[in-house]
Image (tube, rainbow, N blue to C red):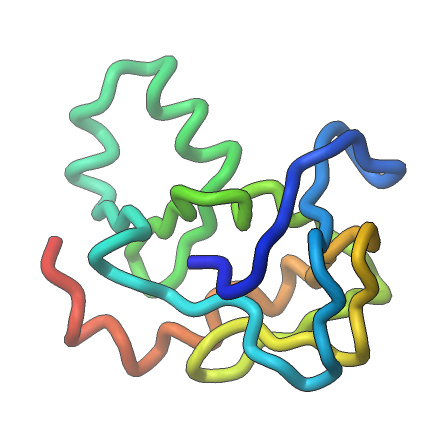
Length: 125
């Protein structure tokens, strides 16, 4: 769940992107996994979805330790960058430096999922 006001707009990186609607200070948590808000599926549950639902879900989710995580809010539009302005910690996603209003919020997809290692026991799937 995003913890700051954001919006979705055309991105220079790809398609649509996630943009800050307010200034965000450096080293500030901007997203956290909320099992009551974000959708979590197993492989078995994913296979029960109609194919077009499955394709949409896979386009915007990430997988970690056998679970698929789908952000219900604008977070699903966060694009990949080799020079991200966010980083993953165990309790969520943080700004690396100040992110200004109107700036695209980007992450390194190679690091997605590291923060959920200790949360799997809290999931109710």
